[in-house]
Length: 199
Image (tube, rainbow, N blue to C red; front, side, top):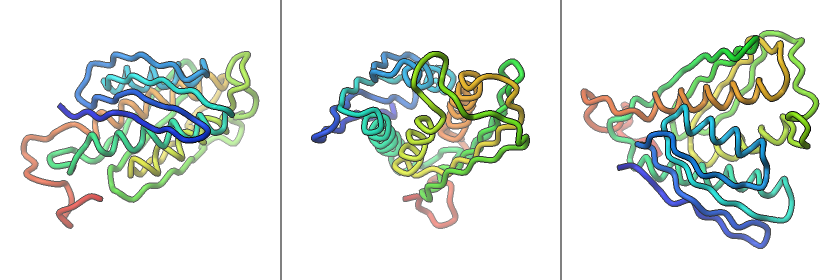
């Protein structure tokens, strides 16, 4: 079973938990930020990853960024040498009037790119009645992508909804796309790269 401990302790944060790639979507997440707990819960549920996570720290910026670092490293380590994985995943998710597409390449070359088809999409404001913003979510994503070694391009195709729905659609689609990308293809012998390695 592909799994790894999540651990990061600095002068600013204390983070621990576990990620199981071959899970069933079970979660126990306590980050101190309700919106992030919710987003990581739907990410794991729809990606069929088991995720336990406890985090404490001084500032919101530090906790959110460092959760991305710790989870990204653990995700990458859980995949091992990446032999047999599909490597690529793509999912377009609709939630009410919101449509978000996520495209994944487990490439070893971390990239995060956002596209918007509609300029009228409003990414300002906060997640419900909290202080959690789109910038907070992006801080997590940047850290996660960089330390997991994946390329992630997401497209907000329609954003006629609040920030809650946009972010929830994004994290659900990310879970589904990563589930595809981490899936094992029994026909694939070895690493899915003509280089013979993904590092």
